[in-house]
Image (cartoon, rainbow, N blue to C red; front, side, top):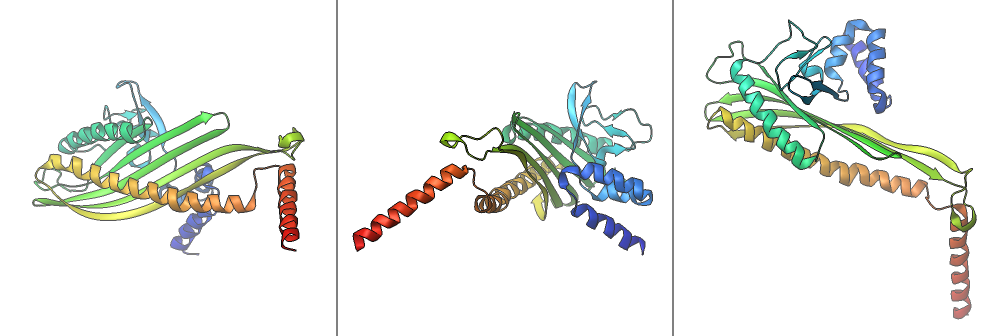
Amino acid sequence: MSEDATFDALLDLLRRLPPTAVEANVDSLCDLAPEYADDLLGNVDQPLKVLRDDEAGREFLGCDYNRDGDSFRSPWSNAYLPPSQAGPSPSPRLRQLEVSLNAAFDTYREMYYEGGVASVYLWDLDDEPGAKEMSFAGVVLFKKSLATDASSTGTWDSLHVFEAHERGRSAKYKLTSTVMLVLDTATAAGAGGAGGAADEKGGEGKVTLSGSMTRQAEVDYPLASAAAHIPNVGRMVEDMEIKMRNLLSSVYFGKTKDVINELRSQAGLEHKSREDMLRAELAGKLGARRG
């Protein structure tokens, strides 16, 4: 089997395994095929890691785009934690833009997510970062964990990877966005005791809804100055997130709800039996009246 075919087989296997165990599955495949470890880590989206920069007193997100070995670069202090001597960093001009984008998306996170953690990382694409027209790439990360009570938990991870190429008074942006969603809800469906209450011997279980979705877009925006990248990237990410949230809500959640409602009833057997008896009684009385 060729190298490309082997790597495709590894990716195909990951697509068929539970999304909730993607980290453990990637680690297992890296141990099984260490020669493909870097390719797997760079091509498979994994849940974001929440880390803390003690120097800045802020949390930040870790992923493959700010990782160097076992260290992750903080967007607040621009330092690798744990310290790494060889970790790449953006040029001074790009670092200034990175700081401004982190401040802007921190406000965005508070407005849209009402909590969670956001981080932005940029890196140069130019061989000479001091050129007048910049070409750079970056990633905007969001993570929100939800724990409403002991029976329901959920996590939202979104990664927005983009490239920006300045062309005079405009800039061309290429965006690839991925959302990873996990929802866990504990359920208790009894056999139906007196009054339809759940019996202690009834079944207990957990419903897990998880998966990921990826979308791409290309846009051109006016660019009066380097600072214009901030509203341009913000508008691009905001529009994509709105589209993906609406798609998740109307299509994915809607279809799942329809399927579950057809396959499984939350009411007990006694309640269902009473409904059937009432329906038969009404049908009998209607038939007698017509006769």
